[in-house]
Image 1 (tube, rainbow, N blue to C red):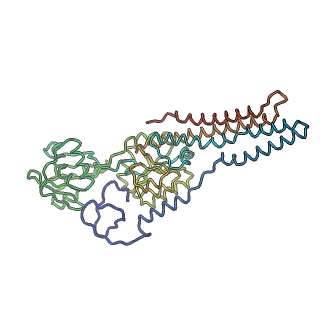
Image 2 (image 1 turned 120 degrees about the horizontal axis):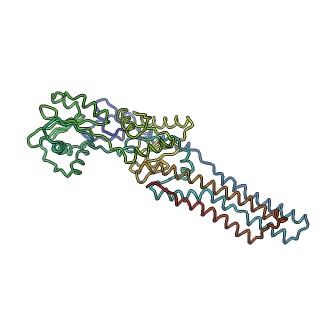
Image 3 (image 1 turned 90 degrees about the vertical axis):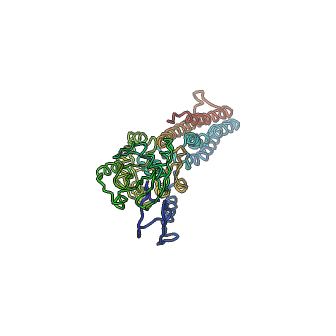
Length: 460
């Protein structure tokens, strides 16, 4: 709901947003807003409001096709009457009339755009890109600004052990086994990171006695008669343990880590840094986007220091942190006012208003249902490189549509005058049979050209 990658301790009189998860302890709260006034209702309202303000894209081919058929009929009738007025046989006049109607091909005009889009949608689907609105394939090539959520989008939203500073005589692996055995009894996401460490390294979970949880501070437990205290710097004060390692804590924090102090009853044994895992290919994707002069922005509800550290590591230069869900949508609207074509990529409920009001909303498949409902595109592979593939497919699709339209216009501009008999003085003319073959050839040409999109090289 908030965009934080790590749980935030709450104390008396703090505000708690409906939809938040209480990882540990007993929570008693008073509802200040109900129904339509709640945060979740506000998010839903913003999603609906943004969805209703989207402007439909005008289809050039459809507009032209609407005028094309009556225009051809008028041309055919005029030609028929002219032939009769010039004293031509009725059979020749009617043959010319039929030839014009047969050779004129509105089919190629009608197929030019939708056929290319259908082929491209299939190409997207086979490469882990689910396009919910066909307009995306026409518009993704216009994108010049991409806004990324942090937690769950640029990162996996799961914590891992990143750094450890060991002050004790205990070997690092043994120390992490001791810490992991106690942490794995906690419901906190940090505990899950240690539990996964034990499983990954096939370390035995040791027996823990006198386990205790101190809400907002940390946990304690005994292993082999030794009491271990694990938590943030506040837990050290609770047990009157002197902290002489403030500089090391600051160093780990600047690297975007959450800090876990490990201490016994007398002193600090180690400091462990835990952070969110950056999504695979995130750095490479941002690098390619920057190279193509597409501005990348991180927009997150997480704290500024953590956000800036992750942004720096993957190449994003602009960070907007500590923002609420409604503020995310406002920022997207402000960017659009600057004549930017904005793509928003997110995964959480808090991203849904921004996804809805962006020009193109992209959600990762691991995201929330409301985020996926609010987006135009779902990345089923959860791979950010799919965004680059989407833009590439869009550019190729537009080029293919233009080629199809050019051929359709060229064909009709060439064949209709021939069917009218304007080139008969130089010996060039056609009959209804040849006209029908030419019409079929025109449609097949468009179909074959659109089919070429299937052979596009996509980075897997």
